[in-house]
Each structure stands twice: as C-alpha cells, then as structure tokens.
Amino acid sequence: MSGLMCKTLFIDLDDTIWDFQANSKLSLRQVYDEFSLGRAFTGYEQFEKLYMTANHELWEEYHHNRVTKDFLIVERFARPFREAGSALSGDMDFIMALNHRYLDVLAQQKTLVPGAIDLLDYLTAKGYPLYILSNGFAEVQARKLQSGGIDRYFKRLILSDEIGITKPDRRLFDYALQVVGSTAADTVIVGDNYDADILGAMNAGWRAIYFNRDNLPVTGPQPDYMVTELSQLKAIL
Image (cartoon, rainbow, N blue to C red):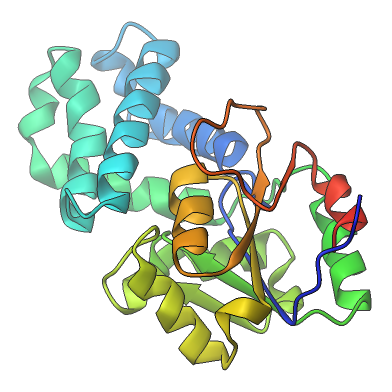
C-alpha cells in the first residue's frame, strides 16, 4: 500500500479514536440506575435500544442542520419515554437533568478504539501535527480527550460548536484550515462517518481516509483510502 503525504492531519474523535459506542452504553447504564428508569421501561435493554435509535437519527439530522443542538439534547431522551408511553417524556426538568448527568458521566469514560494509543504514538513519532475536528459538544469533547489520556497528542481541538456549523458543511473544513494555517492540498482527515467526515472533507478539497470499522458498503464517491482497523493506517501515513 503506497503512502499518503500530508503536512496536517485531522482525526475525528467519537468512534474514530474514543470509543463512543462503548462509552455511551456504560454511561446509559449508569444513568438508568441512578434515575430509576425501570419505572418507565420494561428493562434496560428497551431503554438502550430506543435511545440509540433516536440518538443516531437525530445526529444524522444535526449533521445537516435540520435540527438544533438544543432540540437534539432534549429529543433523544424525550423520545424513548414517549415511545414507552411514559409521562416523563413531557417533564423537561427531568429530561434536562438526565441529559446533564449522562453527558457528565460520558465525559469521564476512558475506553478507546482498539489501537488508538499505538497509532497516536506512531503518528507523533512521525512528526505529524495532529488536530481533532468534531461535531461533538464543546462541554464534553475536551474532557473525553483528558479521560482517555490522549489530550497530549493533539495541538488543537476544533469543534463545530465554535462557529455553529457542522460537518459535512464545507465551511467548517475551511474554518479548520484557517485555524491551523494549512491548505486543503496538504491536509488529510481520518474519520468513521462517511457522510460527515469523508464526503465533507472531499468536497472541501481534502484527502480522506475512511475508518470503516463495520466494513459498510460505500455507494458514493470513494475515499482516498479505507481501513477497518486503526493499525492499518500505519501503512498509509
């Protein structure tokens, strides 16, 4: 596999190096117990399934500016209660307290995607300036880096929250280049979301490496490279 030359390397955070899926499940389980949610659901499994479905759908909408951050935060918790037939869906104080606690617990989780530390050590030794580009929320993303013990690897965390524009919108990618003083031709991104990370970057003139952990079919434009494990990036970068 031939190498990919670049001067600036951006990496997505959630489910690219910090294992959002694993950490989210741990956090959901904790708040389920703390808030006695068994009174609203048949069991934890029902709550997790309804939440995960709602959260995934809402994030897809959020990526494309079809819903606001404030709506997402409320609706991803309100919808599971509504679908379970619980009146708690309309208790905004309860929903907001639940969301606040969930985000606090989530930010403390430490699970990384397998191979993350090894890859970051490798990239640092190679001299790449590393940056995070994420649609995640400002109030938790920096804490995730600290909890995972990986904040030291990155020169800067750039978030959609900073300008109110999310990936895949080209304006966020252009903003990121301005912040770090790079050019599209010299920049590569590694990300797990084909729509937000890969198409967004390609449309902005960047090169893109798709971390396709679940080996999903790619029906649109092909990324420069595709890997299913982080360790495979060492043959590219």
